[in-house]
Length: 225
Ligand SMILES: Nc1ncnc2c1ncn2[C@@H]1O[C@H](COP(=O)(O)OP(=O)(O)O)[C@@H](O)[C@H]1O
Ligand SMILES: [Mg+2]
Image (cartoon, rainbow, N blue to C red; front, side, top):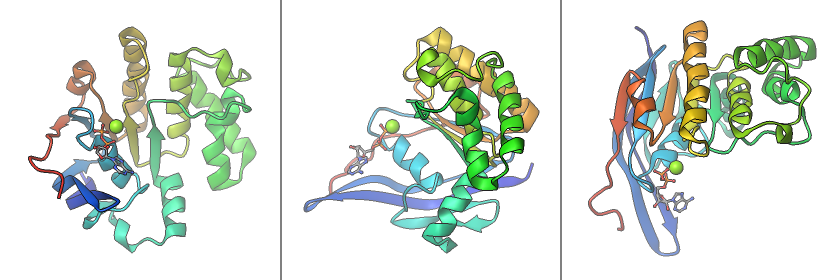
């Protein structure tokens, strides 16, 4: 298996006023292409912080992250947004779908933004809507869908650009267990078709067990400095 992601000794603190909250200290791990990694740990331990760093939404204080041989520290702010659109897919606890756009438009959006080709984007979006069981709902607006269906649209949208890495932050945190399982069943089906690589932050041990590796985060002994 070839290496996809290398997280090398990253640390991150937040400064508020004159207090510094240390959240991550010298975290290192690797992910191969096609692998699924689950991240677990109590609320506040730094799971979202870590995902935001891997997702290029925030910068570590020290250490390096490398995706497909591109060092994050080498990217300018402009390059970062292009890189995110092309190489990373995001699914959050709340779907963040655009309410004034239909299912197919929401899914196609990142493709159209990155590629400019409407026809291709809509074809791809239709295929993905079908793959998450929403082929009959293309013209529906997000408010017309259930929570699980909205989250399936978010999954389809997150992979429309064939990202190298899909990042999911508590994707089923807002769903009942049965619906959550159904959403993840679709993700695991897509995994096989698209050879997805994925990091999933989850409190759900059943989901974590379906991944190749589990990274269990623990609170730092002393995190106020
Ligand atoms: N932007 C921020 N500014 C200050 N503190 C933050 C910020 N984001 C997160 N934190 C703090 O960092 C810690 C880790 O947060 P987070 O990564 O969201 O944890 P988790 O996702 O594991 O629940 C928490 O104590 C949280 O309050
Ligand atoms: Mg979180």
